[in-house]
Amino acid sequence: MGIEIEHNKGIATVKLSGVLNETSYATTNALAEIAQEPNARVIIDLSGLHYLGSFGLSVLVQTVTSSRRNAGRILFLNPTPIVSDLFEVTRLKTFFEIFGNAAAAEAALMK
Image (spheres, rainbow, N blue to C red):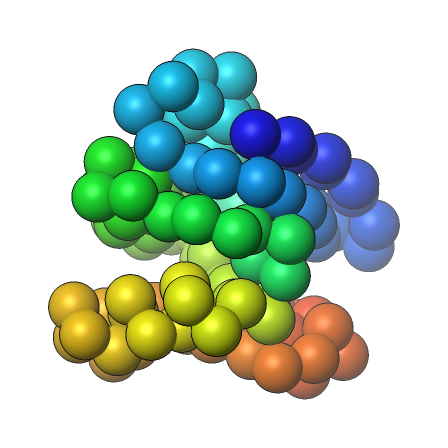
């Protein structure tokens, strides 16, 4: 599992790659820290995520829920087809805010 975090204009962009499952401790911890920040504005780029297990899905739900409790907002960018299908099957497409391009995601966070 790979994770890269960049900060620009008050927005954190988190790029995930590989597999997000129960062995992704560093990624899970990094996402938990981001979610705890008050008023965090975050874009999680899923374009490099090849597999999302049930544990990984739970991590994403917990991250978004925790961030919302702290007046933050987390958006998802470019999920791979397999991840997008999983969001559809689990009906999380209505829970998550998902964007197809970075400019639209950034504009949504600036509102």
